Length: 343
Image 1 (cartoon, rainbow, N blue to C red):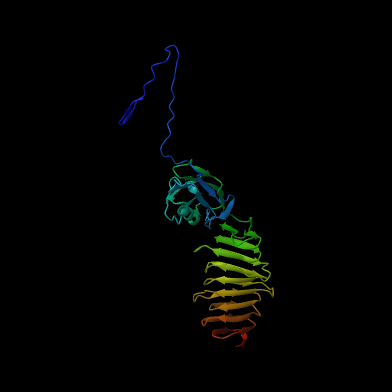
Image 2 (spheres, rainbow, N blue to C red; image 1 turned 180 degrees about the vertical axis):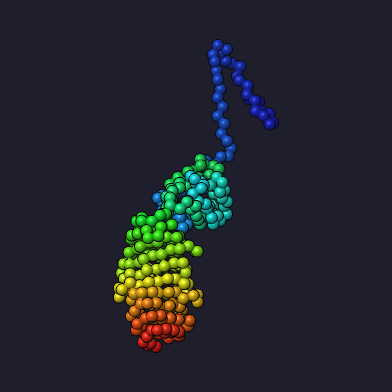
């Protein structure tokens, strides 16, 4: 073997038999190498998530990305929607979202991409009255080990359109229903307790406790509420919205709401945030609690009114029988009515 600078030569020995086929094999061992150890790991993905079209969802809030490979300095993570028309991502952090192909992309250390995924917010964009399920393909590439994929994450988005339907909620504050466009005289029925009902030009009848009703801005909406069992329901709306209270207790927020009691002695309404535009309460019997709010009572009887908090409480009576008022720092306007005032 001759040694030469910059090259390597091999001379076979002279003492060999030309009739014998001899082969010499050389094994090369690299001077430096980094073995592939581990690779990206995705944990915490959740399938079967459910929301309504008025809600958003942090789909990946429990996800963690790790990588044991010391050669992996940065990861590239993509999340791709099965149908880009079903929604979009917001709160992108260090990443970017392509709404045309429905793909979110972020790069960084495992901790950085995990934080970005945890904060990612999905906003659905499905049409009214349909139910759609979206699958999210999560892929992690560390440029060393093979790409890791996870298609576990799914979310089903729903809403209801049309009257006479039965819509179930219940079990936790995150449970919800979204109701649109019920015809006159054909309210939908809400079953269950604990949850949120979104109303847009819709009417519902509900028998349950700890339900929150939210009316879309500038849209009509009404709820006839019963069965709260001492655990108050809550209604958010404006002057285009109606609340019927039947043996129930309801906190209402918003100016110019129309309220009504039936004849149940258990009726109660606590009024907030009327913004100087009085709510209107008609018929029936019950308890009215004013929290820096204004209300006009019409054609009912034997109501009890409490001035609870605030200095701008005001109540007006029209065509009533004897009423009882408790509290202070308020205004009472009696017109063709009688009241006992304590405070």
